[in-house]
Picture 1 (cartoon, rainbow, N blue to C red):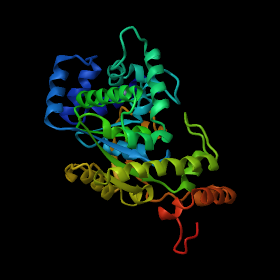
Picture 2: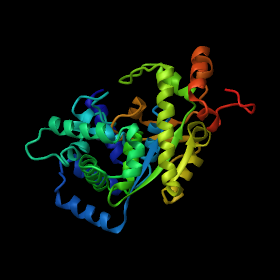
Picture 3: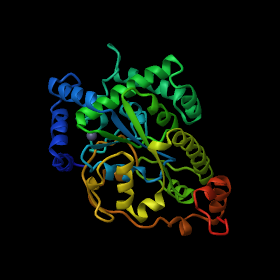
Picture 4: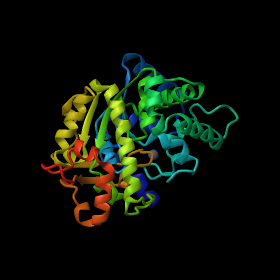
Length: 353
Ligand SMILES: [Zn+2]
């Protein structure tokens, strides 16, 4: 893509509300974490109200990227994409190195001011990424979800990771001048950790999509997204959804279960529900029926559709898999996803897949 396109998108993005425009302009001008103007704003925000993080969980290909980008159009909301992968992707070791704004993460005016946070003196970005990735793999993978929920900050490594994430979320809120950060990471261990971050209140959406539609999506390569077999996709689907359920059961008063199919059937009504979940004014809903104008964003990875801007219409149904996914694969997915397939309402009235 050309630099002109990027400039246009930045211009469009910056045409949003005055408060957000000020924050991004400061970032674009290279204002660092110790910029006095930003520091003043940040300290006021931190003392007045806790920071909200809306965490969209579930297994990949569940529609979290478009949901996050819709929410990104709400004043005071800021969609960061999959924040867990910031360090890995910025270091060139992830699926892609691009921000939603089209620049490399290390060159993005927003993330280039966030990446130095927590980096010890004398450490290169690569060396710091090594440390962060090691802590993530050792403490907040899906398999660690129940340990994090039960034992919290139980060792030095997870305390260090929690401290980093707390500082990063706060800095994101300050620089974007937002009150609700939308994180579509979907790594359950990381989602479970949110409840232990000082001054941060997590809200959870457990977003589930029919595993047959998910398997069909994984069968098609798309830009930087690799493919996965239906059996493997469904194994992850079950594991990630069970872990997500454990998290929302821990925080029932700030959690919501949502099927992707119900979201696309009534996008505007669903966003109303999400705003109520976050205790935010529903009049801020940016959707008109199923239409929204998306501007460029600063998402760390996610579905490649995150780069799309302009008028976007949410399609009402998601049944391509019925004809595109081979019958043998449909049977495999239905078998491996049982009994969650039935629990989530993806069987007919006779209980058949
Ligand atoms: Zn960016």
